Length: 282
Ligand code: PMP
Image 1 (cartoon, rainbow, N blue to C red):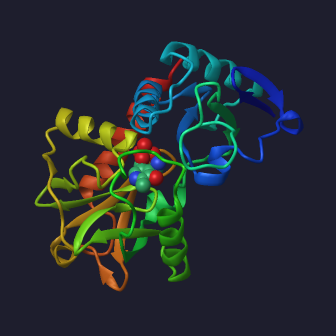
Image 2: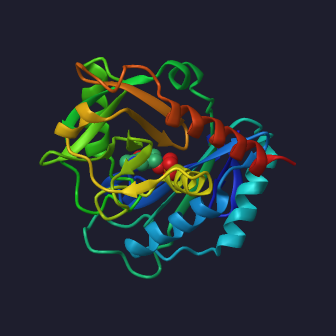
C-alpha cells in the first residue's frame, strides 16, 4: 500500500509520524473520508472545499492548492489501484515540543492520506437500522471536521453497547445528528434535518441529498426535530460518505412510522445510486 506523506508516496513501513505530532497529542488537525467507486472519486470538489475550510477554521495553512491536492490523491488512487473503497486524508499542525500554543512558522503541517477498505452496507440499506438516543456532549464547532472525535467515539460505542447501529444525538431534546452521520425525518412527504450550523457537520452526502430533493420535487426543510417528535415521523434515515442513505426503522424501543423503510427514503436511495453512477462513470 502506498501512502501520501507531504507530497511523497511511501510504503506503509516507511512512514514515521513524530511522537510530538500535534495530531497525536492534541487531536490538532482535520480530516476527510472520500469515497471511490469504480476507480473514481465521488464528490471530490465538496470534500476538498470542506477540507480547506476545516483547516482554515483551525488556522492551519495548507501548503497545497485544491488542484495540487486533488492531483496527489488521484496519483495515490492510481498507485494503489483502488477501484471500490475510500481515501482517508488528514492534516495536523505538525510536530513541535508539546505546548498548547501554536508552534512557529517553521513547523510544517503534516499531511497524510491512504486508501481504506469501504463497501456498500447493503444489508443495512435494505432492511434499515436502529439508533440509540444519547445526549450530544460535543463542543460547539461540530461544523469543523476535526480529529478530536472523543464525543463521537463515546457515543458510537454506547449506542453499539445498547445494540444500535448508530447514536442519535440531541442537545436539550433537539436532535442534531448521528455520531458519524446526518439524521433526517420525513413527515407528509417532506424531509426535515438540522440546519447546517455550528452544531452539526454539513455532510457532503447531506449536500447531495438536498440537491436530489430539490431536483425531484421533495421538500427539504432545515428545521430541527425534537426527541418527542420522533413518534410522529413517517420515516427517518441517516446519510454519510460510507453509509450513503440508510433507513432508520427504530430509535431505542420506539418504531419509526411502520417500522419499515419508507417510500421517500427508498426514492432517495435510488436517486443517490443513480447519482453515483452518473458522477463516477468513465
Ligand atoms: N456528521 C458527522 C459527525 C460525521 O462524522 C459524518 C461523517 N463524516 C457526517 C455527519 C456525514 O458526513 P459525510 O456525508 O460528508 O460523510
